Image (tube, rainbow over all chains, first blue to last red; front, top):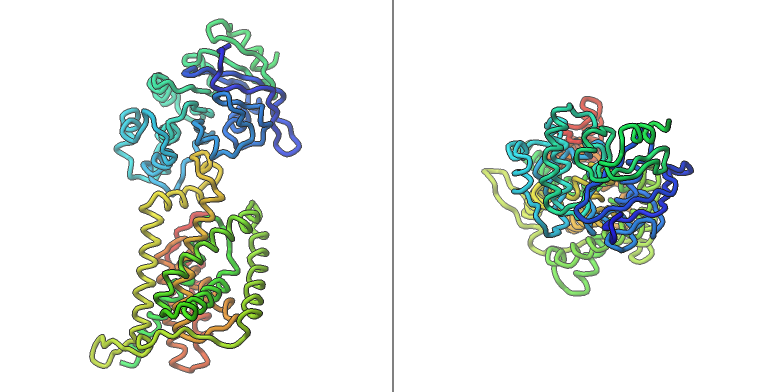
Length: 235
Length: 288
């Protein structure tokens, strides 16, 4: 475990109305570290990310970022502190062009390595299509816009919710190939994935959620396939 | 020549209707809020201008320097303190609350200013005319009103599609939750939208008050004209809203020329015909 974590989630419970989705989940993440949160559908992975991003209520001290408790503060405030979420299903703004989507990601004006120029360098195809409505792009290109938009805020922590969802394997490999560049800028990353193979390639540590609880945690290289499968499916 | 004059008058009045409609359209576009008190806020702006002109002894057009920012401030506060609390998945609460607001404004104005008709006086500007062609004259005031209306629509268009604030408006309209992830505080964005809407209302209110007598009960009729212009033009399209205002104005002018009693009726009929033929309006932009 890192000594002074960038992000510390401690005993987090989360609810949708009366339905409890997370039960005492604890995770930690160091600066410039990449972790993966894996698990089956409905295990609570997206709920965890939404809670960190401020879209769901949480106990104030259940989430600490840079040592400051931020559980349950408004999402725009969380974003201003340097946490960016690439939402599940991409969540691009349909009435904005590709470039406008990126610009609105940068509207907080946090300083850092990322700007329009760097994003177009990372995803050259977006530069050619920057004037198009975001809806005119292929699924993979839309995912690039969503990642670029999140990076434009120069976050210290990037939360990625199923960036491989609904994309062809070759496109997924293409997007994952850019992650080392992003990690090279000392951004910490939480990858939520169902595609375990991709997640294991990038992440140093793994948390496996099962029915709203952490079923398994450890360094990626120490975990056997069998242990992951057992935690994933609960067998 | 008579008909040219009639249509011209209609077009010029239509500009005013487009200004009634623009603020309404903007609010609906950004936060799906139907502001029933919109017409009463126009009348409120007219009274505000009345107080400003009488207290400071300045002309109604000069009073805009104060009335526009004041109304924008009222809009921001109204949204932050009241209307934001009504927004949600249900369309009914904001409808009911703005309806209540409409009643409060009307009766508040009645209590303070009585039911007597008032008017803003713009001096020579009211009677000056401009000769456009042989036998075609237009009043300087309606012409100015029309030019201002086009300028207001153009400015809103620019604001919406060329500025960071407009980008924030469109993003928040698309997906309020994701907009928050970009660091946008929805409550603040909505309040800014209402401030812009009421700034336009202020301009419309002052021109309304120079053009004709006004009293506290006139709001709902202005609301109807505004609604009709928005629907004719198509939801979400600002230039469509201008076109809607012009069509409504021309229809009313033609009706009034045929028989003075048909003015308002002709406008409603034009609205109903367009609603029947093209329910989505002439230049729709909203995807549903």
